Length: 227
Image (cartoon, rainbow, N blue to C red; front, side, top):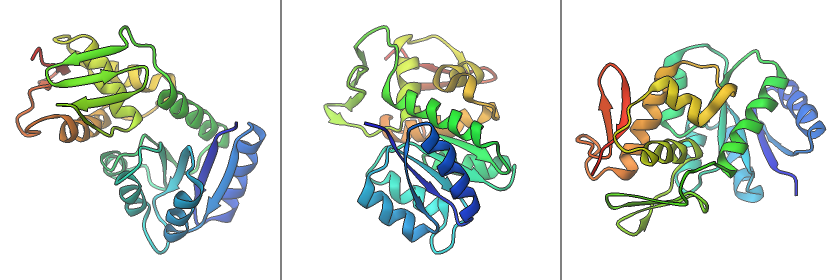
Protein backbone atom coordinates (compact mmCIF):
# COMPACT_ATOMS: atom_id res chain seq x y z
CA UNK A 1 0.00 0.00 0.00
CA UNK A 2 1.30 3.46 -0.86
CA UNK A 3 2.58 5.71 1.90
CA UNK A 4 0.46 8.53 3.31
CA UNK A 5 2.01 12.01 3.37
CA UNK A 6 0.52 14.93 5.28
CA UNK A 7 1.51 18.33 3.81
CA UNK A 8 0.96 21.28 6.16
CA UNK A 9 1.34 24.83 4.84
CA UNK A 10 -0.87 27.91 4.91
CA UNK A 11 -0.03 28.67 1.28
CA UNK A 12 -2.44 26.66 -0.88
CA UNK A 13 -0.20 27.01 -3.92
CA UNK A 14 2.66 25.22 -2.12
CA UNK A 15 0.35 22.44 -0.94
CA UNK A 16 -1.07 21.97 -4.44
CA UNK A 17 2.40 21.79 -6.02
CA UNK A 18 3.67 19.25 -3.50
CA UNK A 19 0.49 17.22 -3.79
CA UNK A 20 0.90 17.01 -7.57
CA UNK A 21 4.53 15.90 -7.37
CA UNK A 22 3.90 13.40 -4.56
CA UNK A 23 0.83 11.84 -6.13
CA UNK A 24 2.80 11.45 -9.35
CA UNK A 25 5.23 9.32 -7.29
CA UNK A 26 2.40 7.17 -5.98
CA UNK A 27 1.96 8.69 -2.50
CA UNK A 28 -1.42 9.35 -0.92
CA UNK A 29 -1.55 12.99 0.14
CA UNK A 30 -3.66 14.79 2.72
CA UNK A 31 -3.36 18.50 3.48
CA UNK A 32 -3.79 20.96 6.32
CA UNK A 33 -3.45 24.73 6.24
CA UNK A 34 -3.03 25.62 9.90
CA UNK A 35 -1.77 24.15 13.16
CA UNK A 36 -5.08 22.86 14.55
CA UNK A 37 -5.91 21.29 11.18
CA UNK A 38 -2.53 19.55 11.16
CA UNK A 39 -3.08 18.06 14.61
CA UNK A 40 -6.57 16.87 13.68
CA UNK A 41 -5.34 15.31 10.42
CA UNK A 42 -2.52 13.49 12.21
CA UNK A 43 -4.99 11.98 14.67
CA UNK A 44 -7.46 10.95 11.98
CA UNK A 45 -5.18 9.81 9.18
CA UNK A 46 -2.00 8.52 10.89
CA UNK A 47 0.34 9.66 8.09
CA UNK A 48 3.63 7.90 7.40
CA UNK A 49 5.44 11.26 7.11
CA UNK A 50 4.60 14.93 7.71
CA UNK A 51 5.89 17.87 5.68
CA UNK A 52 5.42 20.73 8.11
CA UNK A 53 5.73 24.48 7.61
CA UNK A 54 7.00 26.34 10.68
CA UNK A 55 4.99 29.53 10.25
CA UNK A 56 1.39 28.39 10.66
CA UNK A 57 -1.73 30.20 11.90
CA UNK A 58 -3.40 28.96 15.05
CA UNK A 59 -0.63 26.70 16.29
CA UNK A 60 2.97 27.07 15.13
CA UNK A 61 4.86 24.33 13.33
CA UNK A 62 7.17 24.06 16.34
CA UNK A 63 4.20 23.36 18.63
CA UNK A 64 2.69 20.90 16.15
CA UNK A 65 5.99 19.00 16.06
CA UNK A 66 6.25 19.07 19.85
CA UNK A 67 2.72 17.68 20.18
CA UNK A 68 3.40 14.98 17.60
CA UNK A 69 6.57 13.86 19.36
CA UNK A 70 4.72 13.28 22.63
CA UNK A 71 3.34 9.98 21.41
CA UNK A 72 4.61 9.36 17.87
CA UNK A 73 7.84 8.83 15.95
CA UNK A 74 6.28 9.70 12.59
CA UNK A 75 9.03 11.28 10.46
CA UNK A 76 8.81 15.07 10.06
CA UNK A 77 10.40 17.29 7.42
CA UNK A 78 10.17 20.95 8.36
CA UNK A 79 9.79 23.80 5.89
CA UNK A 80 11.36 27.10 6.88
CA UNK A 81 11.15 30.38 4.98
CA UNK A 82 14.45 31.63 6.36
CA UNK A 83 17.89 30.11 5.98
CA UNK A 84 18.75 30.52 9.64
CA UNK A 85 20.72 27.83 11.45
CA UNK A 86 19.15 28.62 14.84
CA UNK A 87 15.67 28.06 13.45
CA UNK A 88 16.68 24.72 11.96
CA UNK A 89 18.35 23.56 15.16
CA UNK A 90 15.21 24.35 17.17
CA UNK A 91 13.23 22.16 14.79
CA UNK A 92 15.75 19.33 15.04
CA UNK A 93 15.78 19.54 18.83
CA UNK A 94 12.00 19.13 18.77
CA UNK A 95 12.47 15.90 16.85
CA UNK A 96 12.27 16.87 13.16
CA UNK A 97 14.14 14.49 10.89
CA UNK A 98 15.12 16.97 8.20
CA UNK A 99 14.43 20.52 7.02
CA UNK A 100 14.09 22.31 3.69
CA UNK A 101 14.43 26.05 3.14
CA UNK A 102 11.92 27.93 0.98
CA UNK A 103 11.91 28.52 -1.93
CA UNK A 104 12.57 24.90 -2.85
CA UNK A 105 12.54 22.58 -5.84
CA UNK A 106 9.57 20.18 -5.45
CA UNK A 107 11.75 17.40 -6.82
CA UNK A 108 14.15 17.96 -3.91
CA UNK A 109 11.27 17.64 -1.45
CA UNK A 110 10.26 14.32 -3.03
CA UNK A 111 13.88 13.14 -2.83
CA UNK A 112 14.12 14.09 0.84
CA UNK A 113 10.83 12.35 1.61
CA UNK A 114 12.04 9.16 -0.04
CA UNK A 115 15.30 9.31 1.91
CA UNK A 116 13.61 9.88 5.29
CA UNK A 117 11.08 7.10 4.69
CA UNK A 118 13.88 4.77 3.64
CA UNK A 119 15.78 5.51 6.87
CA UNK A 120 12.68 4.95 8.98
CA UNK A 121 11.89 1.59 7.37
CA UNK A 122 15.17 -0.18 6.91
CA UNK A 123 18.78 -0.35 7.91
CA UNK A 124 21.78 -2.54 7.14
CA UNK A 125 23.08 -3.58 10.55
CA UNK A 126 25.97 -5.88 11.26
CA UNK A 127 24.01 -7.53 14.07
CA UNK A 128 20.32 -8.02 14.68
CA UNK A 129 20.63 -7.54 18.45
CA UNK A 130 23.15 -5.10 19.94
CA UNK A 131 23.71 -4.85 23.69
CA UNK A 132 25.57 -1.92 25.25
CA UNK A 133 25.39 -1.71 29.04
CA UNK A 134 21.70 -1.86 29.92
CA UNK A 135 20.62 -0.80 26.42
CA UNK A 136 19.32 -3.41 23.96
CA UNK A 137 18.88 -2.53 20.29
CA UNK A 138 16.83 -4.80 18.03
CA UNK A 139 17.90 -3.62 14.58
CA UNK A 140 15.41 -5.81 12.72
CA UNK A 141 12.35 -4.69 14.67
CA UNK A 142 13.89 -1.22 15.20
CA UNK A 143 13.20 -1.40 18.94
CA UNK A 144 15.31 -0.01 21.77
CA UNK A 145 15.02 -0.90 25.44
CA UNK A 146 16.86 0.42 28.46
CA UNK A 147 16.71 -1.80 31.54
CA UNK A 148 13.91 -3.65 29.76
CA UNK A 149 11.79 -0.54 29.23
CA UNK A 150 11.02 0.49 25.63
CA UNK A 151 12.56 3.79 24.51
CA UNK A 152 10.79 5.74 21.77
CA UNK A 153 13.29 7.11 19.23
CA UNK A 154 12.88 9.03 16.00
CA UNK A 155 14.36 7.40 12.86
CA UNK A 156 17.45 9.62 13.03
CA UNK A 157 17.96 8.95 16.74
CA UNK A 158 17.67 5.20 16.16
CA UNK A 159 20.23 5.28 13.35
CA UNK A 160 22.65 7.35 15.44
CA UNK A 161 22.39 4.94 18.35
CA UNK A 162 22.75 1.92 16.05
CA UNK A 163 25.83 3.27 14.29
CA UNK A 164 27.58 4.22 17.51
CA UNK A 165 26.62 1.00 19.30
CA UNK A 166 27.89 -1.23 16.50
CA UNK A 167 31.46 -0.01 17.13
CA UNK A 168 31.93 0.96 20.80
CA UNK A 169 35.00 3.12 21.26
CA UNK A 170 35.20 4.17 17.61
CA UNK A 171 35.20 7.95 17.19
CA UNK A 172 32.93 9.37 14.48
CA UNK A 173 33.13 12.91 13.18
CA UNK A 174 29.86 14.80 12.84
CA UNK A 175 30.06 14.55 9.07
CA UNK A 176 30.61 10.79 9.23
CA UNK A 177 27.51 10.42 11.40
CA UNK A 178 25.48 12.57 9.02
CA UNK A 179 26.66 10.42 6.12
CA UNK A 180 25.61 7.30 8.03
CA UNK A 181 22.11 8.47 8.95
CA UNK A 182 21.20 10.74 6.05
CA UNK A 183 23.49 9.97 3.14
CA UNK A 184 23.64 12.03 -0.01
CA UNK A 185 20.19 13.54 0.52
CA UNK A 186 21.50 15.75 3.29
CA UNK A 187 22.79 19.18 2.29
CA UNK A 188 22.88 20.93 5.63
CA UNK A 189 25.10 22.16 8.37
CA UNK A 190 27.02 19.35 10.10
CA UNK A 191 26.64 20.83 13.59
CA UNK A 192 22.93 19.95 13.51
CA UNK A 193 24.05 16.45 14.52
CA UNK A 194 24.54 17.93 18.00
CA UNK A 195 20.77 18.46 18.26
CA UNK A 196 20.05 14.81 17.53
CA UNK A 197 22.71 13.70 20.04
CA UNK A 198 21.20 15.99 22.69
CA UNK A 199 17.75 14.46 22.18
CA UNK A 200 19.15 10.93 22.15
CA UNK A 201 21.01 11.47 25.42
CA UNK A 202 17.80 12.61 27.10
CA UNK A 203 16.23 9.28 26.21
CA UNK A 204 19.02 6.76 26.90
CA UNK A 205 21.42 8.29 29.41
CA UNK A 206 20.87 7.84 33.18
CA UNK A 207 22.18 11.42 33.53
CA UNK A 208 22.20 13.34 30.21
CA UNK A 209 24.45 15.99 31.76
CA UNK A 210 27.08 13.34 32.53
CA UNK A 211 26.76 10.90 29.62
CA UNK A 212 28.24 7.43 29.92
CA UNK A 213 26.98 6.00 26.63
CA UNK A 214 27.32 8.74 24.01
CA UNK A 215 30.63 10.42 24.70
CA UNK A 216 31.78 13.71 23.21
CA UNK A 217 35.30 13.63 21.80
CA UNK A 218 36.14 17.32 21.85
CA UNK A 219 37.28 18.74 18.57
CA UNK A 220 36.36 15.56 16.71
CA UNK A 221 32.86 14.17 17.27
CA UNK A 222 31.26 11.33 19.27
CA UNK A 223 31.75 7.72 20.29
CA UNK A 224 29.89 5.02 22.18
CA UNK A 225 31.37 4.52 25.62
CA UNK A 226 32.67 1.01 26.29
CA UNK A 227 30.41 0.45 29.31
